[in-house]
Length: 437
Image 1 (spheres, rainbow, N blue to C red):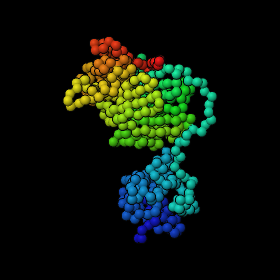
Image 2: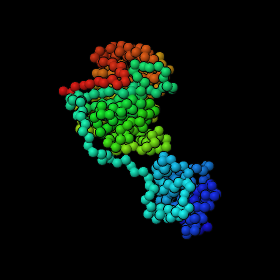
Image 3: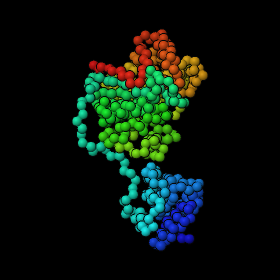
Image 4: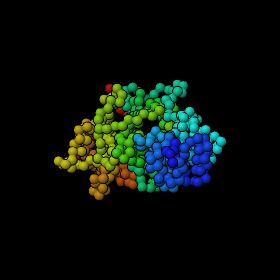
C-alpha cells in the first residue's frame, strides 16, 4: 500500500472499519491498525499526516501512543486525534497535555466525522481545544481592610510541624497533627515554606481575609508527601484573584514542572479542576536569590534522600534558617563537610528551624537515613550561636510525653554549649512576632 495519509489505531473491528471506510469515501488514504503494540513502529515507518487512536486498548493505550508521537522529534508534527467513550473532563485534559490535537467522543456522528477530520487536518477547527492556561485575574479590585501587621513587624507562624504517620493517629496532641508548613509575613508579603497539610487552613485564612495578600510566595524544600500533600487543597490556587510563585528543587526523577502538573493538571490530581490563580514556577539550585528588595534566600542541598533544599532567609535584617529535613552528622570527618557547610550559612541565625525527628535512642538505630535527633540539632544550634532554635518535623509516632522529654534533653544540651540560645517547642498556629527597629 502507498504510504497512508491517516493511520487509525483501534482494536474494535466494527468501529475501526467504519472509521476507515468513511475516510476512504472522503478521499483519504487510510491504514487500519488493530495491534496497539505495533502501532508506533508503523507510524514511524509510514509517517502519515494524522493518527486517530482509541484510548482503551490492550497492550499500549492511545494516550501512550500520543505521547510517543508528540515527544519523538521525527513524528511530533503528526496530528493526533484521540477517540474515546470516556467523556470525563480529566481524560480530555490528559489527552491535550500529552499533545493531542483533538478529542473525539464515542459514539461520534457518522455524518460529520469526515468533515471533522478534514478540518483538523487543515487546521481550521477551533471547537475542541485544550483548556486554556489560567489567566491573570481580571476581577475588580475589592475594598479590603488594611493589613493589621505593622510595617516594623515580622510574624513567623507554624501551621504544621509533624511528619506523616504510617496510619492515621487515634489520639490528639497538644502540638497538633498537621504536617509541615510555616509562613513568614510582613505588612506587604507572605512567604510560605512547604505545603504539608498545615497549608490547608492557611489557605482558608487567606481566602477569608484573615490574612491580606493576593501575591503569594511558596518555597518547597522537596516533594516528599509530608511536605507536599496539602498543595492541591491550598484554596488560593483555585481563586483567580491570586498570583502564586512556587519555587523548589527539581529531582532527576521528576522536574518541578512535572510535579506541579501531576498535582493540578493530571488524572492523578485529587482536584478535578485546573487552577485558576496565575502560577509562576522557579527552579531553585544551590545559589543566592534576591526575591524582593527586603527578602533574599540562599540555598544548599540537605543531607536527605532526593533533591532537598535548605533555605537561609534574609528578611528586613532578620536571618532565618529553614531545614525541615536535614541530618546533622555531629561527627565531621575529612570525608564529609555537611555540618561545616550548614554552619557557614546559618551561624548566628535569629531563628534556626531544624529537623528533630528522633529521640536519642531511636537515632542510634536510624542514623544516616536523613533525619536528625533533637539533641544533636540543639547542640549544633548552640555551638553556632543561634538566637532561637526551633524543634521541627516532629515524629508523628511519638506521644506528647516523648516529645516533651526530647525538648528537655535538647534544652539541657544547648545550655551546656551556649546559655544564650533559646530552645523552642512550637505547636500548630503558634505565632512569633518580631519588632524590627
